[in-house]
Amino acid sequence: MNINDWIKKYLEKQVEVISSIPIDKVADIIEEFIKANKDKKQIFVFGNGGSASNASHFTTDLAKGASDVLKNKFKCISLNECTSLITAIANDYSYEDVFVKQLENLANTGDIILTMSVSGSSPNLVKTVKWANDNHMETIALVGGKQGTISKMANKVVVIDSLHYGIVEDLHMLICHIIAYAFMENPELTNNQ
Image (cartoon, rainbow, N blue to C red; front, side):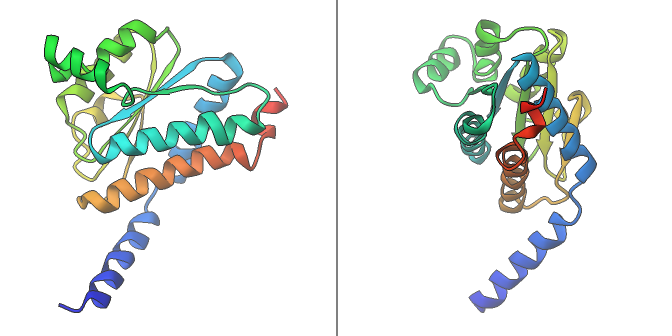
């Protein structure tokens, strides 16, 4: 194996998948975030594994980077941050409840959840999206090529057309950067409202 060839193929595949990102669906999510900012709604972001890291990164970009230039600051939280709370919920209830139990404490009607999942079928994410829908929240999912259960449940879905975990997680973060930088580089999206 030639490592240079492998890197070239990885990047070629990533570029191919980037070109399939549905721009209109990403724009719809940005519009939802504009509304949430205007109405002072909360945004909850979460995922498992690499998607948990992406959730933390995205929340940082919204709460610090985007909020630095906006009149109304984003009210956003990554549900992946409090290890002691996550482990208490997992231990006393089940791992399927680690996000939904947090939302029971924090969420209000009209708030947004954004979850990221390569498989789209993690039981804890499925349970949380169902709860959010039942409680009249806006539900957004970024998923991989398998699409999975949550792609049929969420109000807004962006599918990354790949089964490669690295590429899907790379492009979920790319979409998160597009959303955050839409506000950082265009603060008038919310400041004129």
